[in-house]
Image 1 (tube, rainbow, N blue to C red):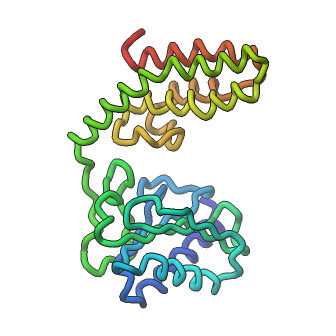
Image 2 (image 1 turned 120 degrees about the vertical axis):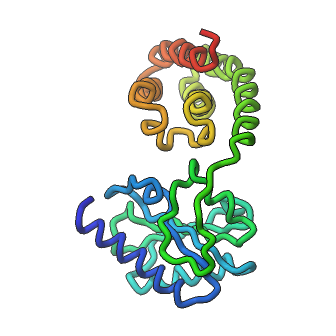
Length: 254
């Protein structure tokens, strides 16, 4: 990693760690995302999870924003509605003086929502910055639950697959390439990613293209990249059969 980027990451993380460690409302703080998988690089953002007292989700996000303002003005601020998981809140923050890709993705969580964030297959090994109560310990996913969900997803994906291929073909037949591409990139390829993941890494079936090269291997990733790069209507028509063959192989129908 570029030394300048490494130092910038360190400053962001240490600024938030210091602010949170001084506040008893924050019980633990750890790095997640690429850091938890030991795959951070100069393009990685800073993913942080903070365990907070009940009722303090938004207040701790405000505390983080205040702390980051000591490094410079905030030029990006977004808080997704509803939170990514139960009993969580999330805010994306970027300091204007840092490179645009080096933003902070901070998730606050109450104790009742902690367990899903510590599933090793999904979130890696937490890089703990502090833990007052000793509760931030990764655990494996429930294998039986993963298997049940995987079987349900397989049935659903296999049943719907021909329908979405037809939707692409319909729009091509109408001369509506934009509509065909919408179904292709919005419905067909995401379902193909999920179907392939169900055979290789079912716990991460919903990851889409994220970590696809790591989880699926170079050969499959190359095939998926080729399917995604469409230059014309004729090009898309040729890719429908290729995608179908890949899906049939995954489902055992080939």
